[in-house]
Image 1: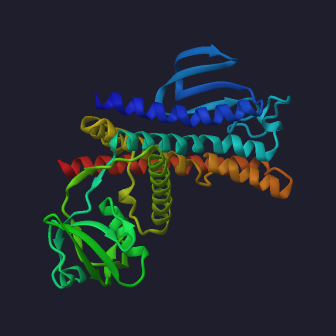
Image 2 (image 1 turned 60 degrees about the horizontal axis):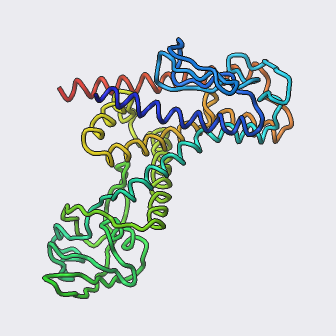
Image 3 (image 1 turned 90 degrees about the vertical axis):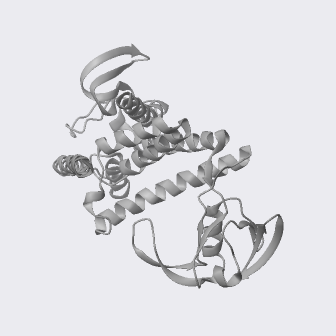
Length: 352
């Protein structure tokens, strides 16, 4: 069942990505010969609206084949107003960007759906209080519920961290204890901490940790839109930073996951709850959007760079340069895929 869920989710994400390219191409009048979910041998195909819609043997991706675009033959010229290579560079950039944008949009829709269904988070309830910390000296106790900090209403544990980090000076905490509202003034101190990439950082802290209590957020329609926007932006930023940290060596290559890891995460989420499955699907959708925007020639981001070059210099890169960079791009992508699979297999054996 897990494998089926994985293939359905991946096909769903690929479909939306390619649909973005397809709709943008059709908007600018470009003919699309093939819309494929998967690569390789054709398993099922149907002709509709001048396009062959197909499922192919290898379901780990997909593509739209447009008139006038062929990575394997960059010198291909197909004339006519319905050809990709006769469109202006800015139009081609929109067609290329539409795929990743569709992934970001899908993630936002999924996060919005999660918010309307009842997103869960940690409650703003104190678990442990670190000895000799600012919170300890201010008299904060376990199970205290934090209602407000200064003029900021607190609804979740995440709100506490944001407010402490983004506010200067002393903080006035309004807490609920045994049915009473108590005010406490706390002076945060700068302490050693770690970010999500396990880098050592300095951070304003008061010395408390969450109780672990889970609450369901009761969000209005407008609040759900804000929730979806913030989650999509956060996920995109996190993945961009992760790629940057990987390139700079902060994140070890052993952290790179492959198709096996993705399949396991999706399978586990599907067995947990529909909200967990939606959350993982949204995160992978953002991941696809971000990775496809990387300036690697074989990806959308690489083709966008080629078109930006053409816009600036008023000439296309030579066929030899295009082919060389495209091949290098496929080598990079292939190497990353093999690294991910290698790491996945290593984790399986280590867990055993």
